Length: 429
Image (tube, rainbow, N blue to C red; front, side):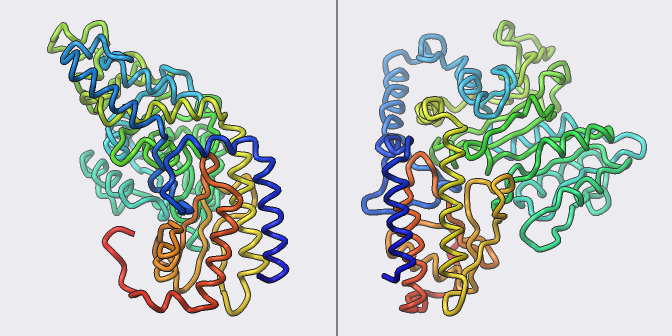
């Protein structure tokens, strides 16, 4: 080990020694001998998740249909209870957040409500770096309104292929825009957008605005209500550790509670009238009004213990450690691994205010390096064209994990270990 890495190791040990959140690591199942750096794709299971799932199963077994009112919490109110636990992480009131559906279903439910093209205001402003699913959904919403997405979906261009400039986004907020939908954190580069500024500038121009917070929820603090965002949605299987296929969340600013949901469903009914079986839809005057179908009770049960962990850890403390973890990795990349023969670089902004929860490490052999990392029991993920995404999650990753990753990146190039792997990508990367 060279002198630089000896110094990095000493620093990692010191930071781990004084880490006030280190005890939370023991509350998660971590694969043996593994440095798990993929929490931005699928979070690790809390140890309490299995017990929670077993408890819900036992209620189904012992109470049967009685669980809708006698479960803990009652299944009938489960979506609202999960929303209440989630709301503080997003800077929202409890009735402005509800657990519902999936990320893209929630996008459809919200955009169908807030996209009301009228007169010259017919366009939706999005961006070319957003997750493709969002673009697919926006195009379909525009077509449902009778317009052509090629003309009415404005995709803000990136200047460098990695990040977005808020000035460019704001420049697209013209008098032809009816709605804006943007990511909180860009899924590939990890850039954190200035959501507060974008809300203010959109509203100053008479434009409604919402956010896909899939890569920011649980990774960065939000103040959705203080910022006056109109709506937002996010998944729960990434930083929130809800498990594969766990249900998503949506946020609706209370200013809009009286709006008629664009996609109506039985579980969006006013709870006090839901079993009246009235054919006239009377939606809940809360985010709950945007629910469509029955909450997935079994799938949701492992999520609740994770939200309890977040409440104990505190979002501000988690953000502080997250910035320290990604900053430490970026420092090593720049200081020891950027020059020949290594050639690594970071496509994530270095400023704390512009960095989300993961680091986009770039290399021409990124795909094969990811395979070599996995062989060493280090779990990253890959995003084309050449991004190794690394997400040191503050609840269960240590500074020692970060150093282990950096040392592996060095040794994989030193020994040309990546050459043992095919350049052909797997179906899931």
